[in-house]
Length: 305
Image 1: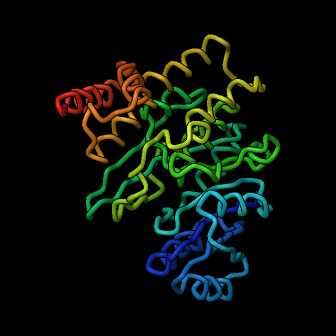
Image 2 (image 1 turned 60 degrees about the vertical axis):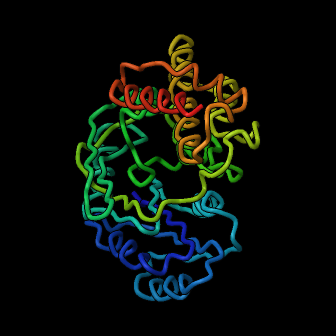
């Protein structure tokens, strides 16, 4: 089975060689490595050309700057693999990442697989590993399974036959939106090992805006619209109602609380939508620890009159 590894690149000269090397060193060799240079202004394209000359499995595409979602979508569109997986241009795969997931998919007959990961921040590693299989979307929504974009492997037919792509309008949350849609359609299988490393580097400034700048383009609203399309979901009507409740009472309030605190806004400065949303926050037993954390953040926000 050919595996397509899609790596969007923007000003990635500092880490790209190490990232690609982690793919070239995989114990599973039937790979197609797709590097999309999204209008870089440094030496990223020169590095991609150098890497292409090193290994025939590498493809390099150059495009005007359109954003990471457009780059990933381009990779999906040109991919030839039976399976698709993603990797950020400053992260790495462990040596057996691809092999372990391919074997798991073959053995289980499932079309979606995820693996555990390590978050690396200032030389400190935070380990995440899970063995939840089957229908896991509610666990994903409430962060009971902290699955990063790099951790997934998906049969290409699932993505392409259902026309699922990363929404290029979203300023954040595009990956969560993408994988929630996948999880509405497919049961999953897990590899109970930490096989990717996600490096948390300089804090992004992309959160410094109101989540409701554009109501229709909100990634949670978009997902709700996807649910209403009445596709062949694997969930019953009752289960879908629970999923929608988790969106309204956990994910959306949590995201808004994080954004408000990041922007250092006071409760009196919030708009009606923000106030209504965070007031709907509920404890979720699937992630009680996070529920307590965000309840405390909510109380902290209320004190900032």
